[in-house]
Image 1 (cartoon, rainbow, N blue to C red):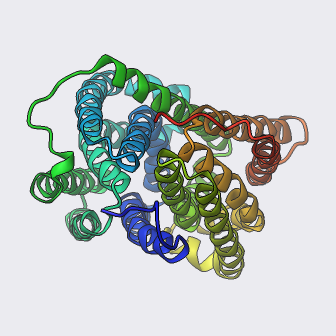
Image 2: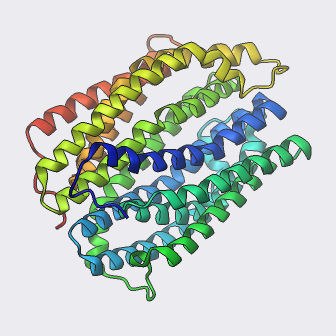
Amino acid sequence: MRDFTSGKISKPLVAFAAPMLIGNLFQQMYSIVDAMVVGQFVGGGALAAVGVSISIVMFLSSTTIGLTTGAALLIAQFFGAKQYDRLKKAVSVSIIFLTALATVMTVLGIIFTPQLLRLLDAPPEVFDDALLYMRMMIGGLIFTVFYNMYTAYMRALGETRRPLYILMFSVVLSGILTVYLVGVLNMGVFGAAVSTLFSQLLAAVLSYIYTRRKMSMLIVEKMEFDFQLFVQILKYGAPAALQMSVISFAHLLIMRLINSFGHAALAGITAVGRIDSLAIMPVATLSMAMSTVVAQNMGARLEDRAIRGFKIGAMYMLGYAVVISAILMIFAPQLISMFIDQDDAYLAQIITVGQQYLSIMVIFYFLFAILFSFVGFFRGVGDAMMAMVVTIISLTIRTASAYGLVLFAGMGPEALAWSIPMGWGISGIICWVYYRKRRWVGKVAV
C-alpha cells in the first residue's frame, strides 16, 4: 500500500504509475496479440472481424468498468481519511452490484449479438467471424469485471506490483495459446477468443487469491449491502459509467462509418487502433495514478498538495506525448505492416489507409495529454460529473465532425483522424476554464 499524503510526490507518482502502466500495456496485449496473429495467419478480413467485434464488447462492458472506477476512487478517499470500516463496506457493495450487472449484460449481449452487428453495418464477408468472436468475448465478460474490480481496489490502496506479475503471466500465456491455436491448429478467430478468455479467467482468479492472502483491508468475509454507500458509489461511478458508455457508443457510430469504406479500410484502422491504444496508454495510466494521489490528499484535506500532484502529473503526460508522437510519425508503415499478412490482396490499401490515419492523429497527442490531465484531476477531487461531461463533449465533437467531413466535405477515412483532435482541443479549453473558476471545490465524500 502507498500513502501519498506526505513526503515527495514526483518520484512516488512515477513509481506508483510504472507498474500500472506495465499492467495496462500487458492488458492491451490481449487484443493486440489477437489482432496481430489473426491478421498475419488468417488475413485482413479476419482482422476486420476482430475489430468490429471488440468495439461492441467494449460498449457492453463500459458500464461496469466505469462503476468500478467510481468505487475505487471512493475507496481511495476512505483510505486517505483512515475510515477503514466504510472502505470494507464499499468493497462489499460494489462486488454485489457489479456481479449482478455483469451477469445481466452478458445474457443480453449474447442474445442480441446479430442485431448489434447489423446495426453497425458489418461487412457481409466478416459477419460470421465477428458473430462467433463477439459472442465468446461477451460470454467471458464476468472474468474481465472481476479482474478490473480487484486491481482497481488494490490500486486505490497503492498496490500495483503483485497484480502486474499476475497479468504479465496471463498475457504471455494468452500469446502462446493464440499462436498455437490460430497459427498451428488453424482455429481462426475461435482460437483467438479461446486463448483470450482462458487467460482473463486465470488473471481474475489469481488476483482474487492474492487479495485474500496479502491485502486484509480488502477482504470481505460477509457480504452486506449498504444503501447509502451504494448511492455514493453511483455518485462517483455513474458519471464514469455513463461517460464510458457514451465513449463506446460514439466509437460504435464511428465504426459504422468506417464499415462504409469497406473491410480493407476497417482492417487498416483496426491495426492503427491497436497501435494508438498502446501509444496513449501511458497518458491514461498517469491520469489514473494522479487521480489516486489527488483523491488521497483531498480526503486528507490537503488541497495544495493535491494541486501540486496534478501539475506534476500533467508535466509528465505532456512530455511523453511529444516523444511518442515523433516516434510514431517515423515508424508508422512498419508498425502497421506487423498486423497484416504480407500476401494479403489488400495489403497496399490497408497500409495506405492506416498510415494516413495515424500520421494525422499523432501530431495532436499533446491535446490528449492536456485533456486527460484535467480529467484525472477532476476525478480525484470527486467531481466525476465534470470528468464525464468533458469526455462526452470530446466524443460528441469527434463523431459529429467525422460524419460532417465525410458527408459534406467528401473526405474519406482521413476524416476520422482529423475529427479526433477537434474533440480533444475544445474539451481541453473547457476544462481549463472550469479549473480556473474552481468549480470543482467541495466535491469530496469525506
